[in-house]
Length: 234
Image (cartoon, rainbow, N blue to C red; front, side, top):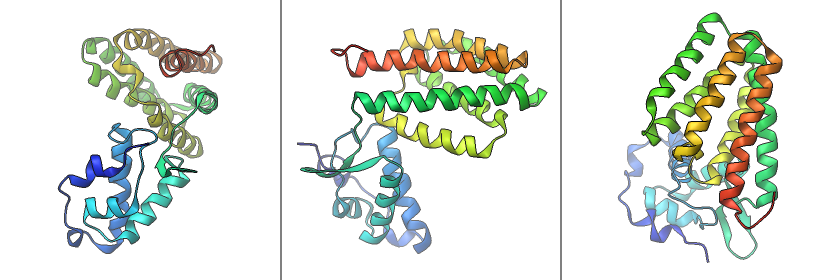
């Protein structure tokens, strides 16, 4: 059976509900739950009980209910027949579908970035690549830097709707476990892939930029599938 909050957060001290304005309570709960999922403190399949969350955060159940519904809409929580509400867990098919969307969106972001990014934005991207080369041995730093690199491309695309779509897909990526960039071998390969992608954007070559971005996502997909489903063929 999946663990519930009783074994983790329910016993931790929480800020008093009275310290929060009524209008901010749902947002507070949402951010706390989302952070727990993103940091892997709540594993896929772990039960999420409204009453326990309310006790953990010392809040009424109304803002907790609102936050839970929001996380359900985003796909981070789901109902299971025998377990109730749990942190969403993805089977192999769902992981494949997620990466298909990520590849398409990252490819489009790179294409648009090559077309629309300002010279300053392109230079910032090249600076990020150069900085990344000096992060060898700092796994956490590399993972944070990876997010900054991709976010720079997303901003450089100058398409607000694409950014929203990318944010939604990347939210679901947290359900796959720790970032692959924490793995030294993947981090080393990604440095080369990032450099190739940034170089294509610098040349203002949309086709090459999209191709590099898609190849980068496919490489991550292969590594993720090996780790999540070692006994299954691709």
